[in-house]
Length: 193
Image (cartoon, rainbow, N blue to C red):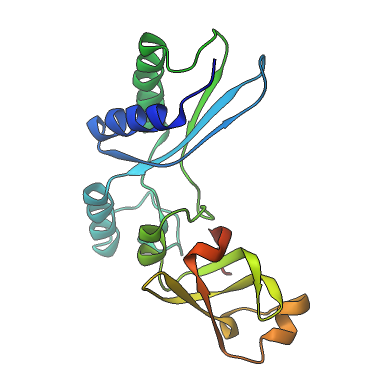
């Protein structure tokens, strides 16, 4: 009764595409009784471009003030509800999650979203990120800074963009640090004040 996450992700992406959405991330947690499938969705690139254009033209009054439009996922509660209903039906019909009981949660990735793939680093160049590496870089595994560049699988962080703490403060004598994407264990955006 193993859950096949690749099949679930493929199905989720198919259903999301029919709603002009993209699947950002997928998590499956829990034991036999209390299982949760959590999906994070956002508008697809075309819909996000429309949102950014509306924000730039001052036509999007319902957007949060002070947050760049490119950081917003653009999804609404209605988007999540419609997707969850359609995707939940497909999950049950295709029996992609064996056993009867599980909870399906669908939401926006949030402003401090995870960065999981190379395209995320390209898209959010210029944003402040916090990350942890598998192996130490300059005697430190925890970094926070402005992502200034991502090329050839290497990301460059500007450490002067944020106040460093702990070991990173000592290592911040350098202005920037280069970290291979393959060395990034986990990373997420940080909304700077």
